[in-house]
Structure formats: C-alpha cells, structure tokens
Length: 197
Ligand SMILES: Cc1cc2nc3c(=O)[nH]c(=O)nc-3n(C[C@H](O)[C@H](O)[C@H](O)COP(=O)(O)O)c2cc1C
Image 1: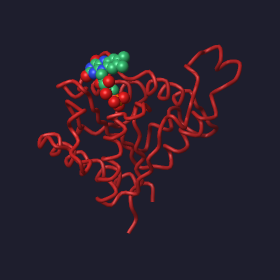
Image 2: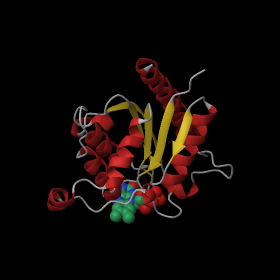
Image 3: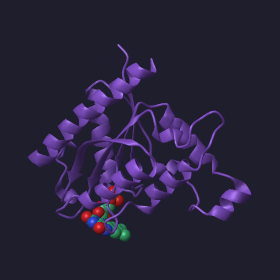
Image 4: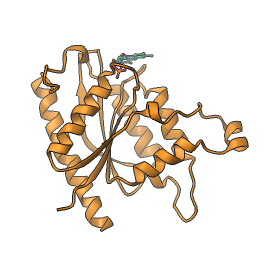
C-alpha cells in the first residue's frame, strides 16, 4: 500500500525549541498512522534575509530552491511555529518569502504551495498556545501564497510543562486536537497522493 509523504518542520530552530518538540511528536504520530514522514530543521537551510537588491544581483538562494523542491516531493506539510508578537517568526516568514520567489520553467507561480496540503501547529509558553500566530500564519499561507491549509490545528499552551515524559501531550484537550489534526492531514494528503498517481 502506498503511503502519503508528509514533510514536518518547526518555525523555530532554537536548541530546545518547544515547537521542534511538537513537530517531532506530530512526525511520530503521522508515522504511526501510515504516513511516510520526513523531518527537517530550517537550521539546515540557511538563507539571507530577503532583499530585493540581493535577489536582483545573485538570484534566489540555493537553499530556497532546494527546500522548494523538497516540499514538492511531499503530499502534505506540517509546520509547528511559535508566535512572535502575534505573528510568524522571522525565520519562517523569510523561508516562505524566498520560496515564493523561486520560479522554474514550465511551472505555475507558487508551485511549492500548490498540489499539497498544509497543517499548522504552535507551542507557546503562554496560556494561549500561540493561537494568534497560527491565524497569522494561515493568512500568509492561504491568502499570500495560495496554499490549502486544513482547518484542524494544534495549539499547545504552557509548553514548558505540556509534554509528558514519553513525549506525548499531557493536556487532554490538546491531545484530542492533535489526533483530529493527524487524521485530517493524513486523509487530505492521501487524496493528493491518489490524484497525483
Ligand atoms: C520575540 C518574541 C516574541 C514573542 N511573542 C509571543 C507572543 O506574541 N505570544 C506568545 O504566546 N509567545 C510569544 N513569545 C514566546 C514564545 O512563544 C516562546 O518563547 C516559545 O517557547 C518559542 O518557541 P520555541 O520554544 O519553539 O523556540 C515570544 C518570544 C519571542 C522571542
């Protein structure tokens, strides 16, 4: 049986990142539920801050092209990202912006964001779980670059105490949201896989 391929990463590359932990938990759960999971760190795809003059003189960074092509090898993408001042982390926004500038012959604009499904999560040390950052990230992906983002999301509040010793979520409500998001992402990614076949 074929398995939908899902790429998982965190919008924070910080050592000890709660969002990297959430991404890892989601990756594990996706794998247990039949997906073929690739987990990456944005630390391994360094890019300069977007600068139109730099783009004109040197083009799009190689890592933006590499990450764009990697995304295209997947039917689904899960991003766990912190909320920074109610918005998206500069690291993640910069990556989204650079990838939106990659244009390859015979491909529509924003090709990396089409033909696959995105799901979002956030872990925050605050009691609100980064929900405003999630809304902002959804706006960027849906309205900015035309991606399909499933409604199911996972917000993990009080992240420093949210993970139990086995790596799962101690909070029952967050654990239920996680299961619902995993089911929906696998179902939608499987649909994209059958369409591509
Ligand atoms: C610049 C900055 C802005 C932040 N703004 C928010 C915020 O608006 N809402 C929130 O819940 N947490 C905010 N935080 C706290 C982060 O959610 C917290 O540091 C979180 O652990 C970062 O994610 P990470 O552990 O994956 O690196 C902010 C942190 C930083 C560094």
